Length: 456
Image 1: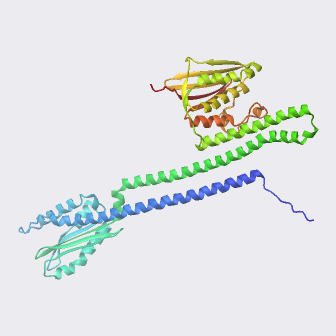
Image 2 (image 1 turned 90 degrees about the vertical axis):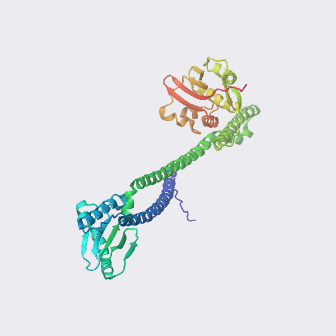
């Protein structure tokens, strides 16, 4: 028979491939969201710009018409100087508006019969540098286009015309001042450029908002990726932890059961105790895992009431007196008050303080000190043992589920690696502050809660 060898990728390689796949998925989704934000922002910018261009076109139309309404007209006095002065004054008034900056402009006074230009704005615009010369030429060409019709007409003339656009707009009017001459006026504008210039602050604010939103989207997806990565690592760690914790008791139980028929009655009784102990250990670990799951999922129901944590600490420590005496540990309680009441779930607080005390007994050398302090409306519980220092890099990890030191792994004294994770979940549920400090003098665990004052 021909044997086929099945090759499997190493677990580390599979993990790296999964991480790359997860990163690529987040990158794709993040890119799509960024494109969506860009599309929405671009659409908003287009709508805003278009409305401002429409508004601008209407305003420049009225600005140009204002020139005709601003004339004084010295028609009775036969002097070109007075007419020119009238025109220059109205042109100056026209260019006071921000709307007309960098536009094209041409205005003239033309004899009706001959078409001779009596005066025009060419010298004025070139000397004042208020306009764009190229656009001025366009404005003059538009006015010249109407001159033939105007000169040949024997009737009073009044022409108003405009061509609105996004990038180019022109407004023209021709009006008869009297039977022997008429006035021409034309403005050529760049609406898009002018709108950008006039609303620069709004565009800068919009761009800043767009960049901020895009940055927020990118940061959100980076955090989401890290969160999912941590979740995956936590699941892997949880699986390895459960496997590790169940491996020893199951192996002991299996070995005992396999050899049961070869054991005498005395040995069976002894091994029965071992089996019960291992089963109790597994049951305790499973119960703690369920409690952690409920608390982190927000499904655990708290039944808060007044709890004196000093009295609770004394009660828990008394149950450990035998172990304390056996290890020759000095156990000290310190506090200035007779009671330290908090509003909390008594069963949950029993788990918290019980875990702190059992850990202190487990790791201390000679002395454990439990302190109580009331500062303002806060009560702080602290427990210090004089055992080995916890390295700084491990201080944040000690709250993780199934995190234990190598020393603890070999110590079967009620160790499951779940205790501090459960403590963390309980304290989080009570909105308490907590932490751990460690140095050469010892390790201190602490938590702080509001002082409970019953309403009278």
